[in-house]
Image 1 (cartoon, rainbow, N blue to C red):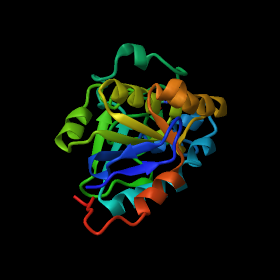
Image 2 (image 1 turned 90 degrees about the horizontal axis):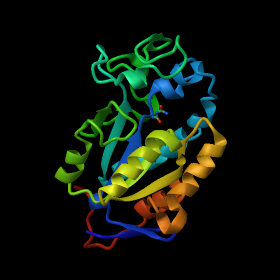
Image 3 (image 1 turned 180 degrees about the vertical axis):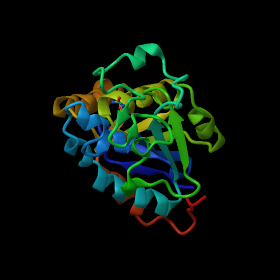
Length: 233
Ligand code: C5J
């Protein structure tokens, strides 16, 4: 077992990869693909797609070290019984959750658009959490999965920065997890929200957590460890 330290804001982030999970939030076709739900709402999906190449590299590095990897997907049961009416009413009337979209019914489990983009397909053994809300803890087994694996730190990535990434990071912070948000592996449809969203995490001495870029994390994961240290599970 060995601890690694990453140059981060507001201060260096120290974590033990054996007790850390890479969390990849909602990298779903509905949010990321041109023609999907996100773009049908008038958003520029290229702003989210910039996170894909660095996230692929980070995922490869995490897999290489044997770190726990957890993917999430936001979405609902086909009968919408897990979608509060208040959430269902949001958005443009023709583009609401459950309506037909370019990639199937919008944000419905089992539909093509609800699934994770090809570039980040979960590997066998990686946990996939289907969540009805913005945060990964609400209405899911996410917390139980972390406890079962002895996870104490999270490396948080995915979309969107100010919505599901923030909600999950805040939920995790309140539960005692140390969270590092990876700045180039998260994305927002709104450049201003991306900037401020990241600043909000590390402000006030790290009110919700730490922020670093993927290069800083990958460099540490790839650094040689001492002969007696092992982080593979
Ligand atoms: C949103 C998410 N933005 N994954 N979902 O509705 O951030």
